[in-house]
Image (cartoon, rainbow, N blue to C red; front, side):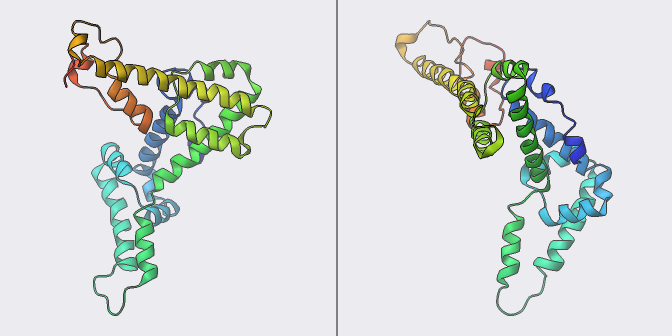
Length: 243
């Protein structure tokens, strides 16, 4: 699995220049992880042990059901449920609640095998970004030509960079360039959302909506790193926008 993740070339992530490149990277890793776990890997004993221990979050369960067969998902669930019922929540209990088992149940609701795989892949991609940014002028140009970096990945990137991810010499420039990608788009969003709001003032009747019609959806994507589709009338480029 790890060898598969690291084969994703950094240019595949940054070349499209459409949206946040780190969101694109995460989406690629999530797809690979869910396809992997519902494929041949589900029969590998060492992988099954890990999935039984970590489980899956709601998001990745949904992706697994969408990409895997019904049987593959059922087999994964069978062993996962069996571990829970035999080790953590038996049908018949006596005496006081077992604090260790309850703590283990709580932990299980907060862990996910796919999330762990994606986080591992993202950490390694960050290191590739830092190395490429520091040593390859062409990549710096490609990095700075991105449409934007979302709020979540701005935070993740800068946290990793400050934790010795990039040299102290390159850190100020990286911070400046990354802030422009995030802060510049933030200013654009603010302007579009503000214009959207003014269009509901009677004094704006007949004026152009400009780029504001999908400002709500784009702002949510920036703030949450999750893409959502705008309403059909906005997609179709209609002149009006629903309240």
